[in-house]
Amino acid sequence: IGCNVCTSADFLLKLVRLVEEENDGGGSEAVVSTQSTGRERRKWIHSFEGVTSVIFLASLSEYDMFLQECRTKNRTEESLQLFKTILDYPWFKSSSLILFLNKKDLFEEKVPRSHIGDYLSGYKGERGDLAYATKFMKDLYQEAYLEESSDN
Image (cartoon, rainbow, N blue to C red; front, side, top):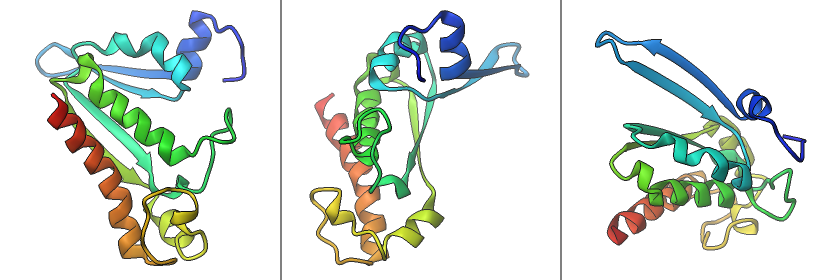
């Protein structure tokens, strides 16, 4: 977020957007959008104890991009690592997990000109093979989920 030491106000304003509404049962529902690095994430992740559902959005089109704060860390690898971390956290063990692979339109434009195999190990498809590329990306997350499920 561009600051070395963040106050609570900075943290809340820049990392978390919280919208709370009363539902029909008189309880509350919260939608939380978070954007942070791993170091910052450790400061707040425990706050989600008791969450019933987690919606995880992963960009299909960022396979050839790198983190701003670490120019050597691939964004898809970072996303996958975060996904595995969420699966492993005790706070989310009984939560439903919903995975959205978004930015499909950008992914479809990018695959013919930017070979996934140049950025992600394990990719065996031909350059420009959109069907294989889509399955490969989906399988990355599905395998992580199945691997974590079998460990527990």
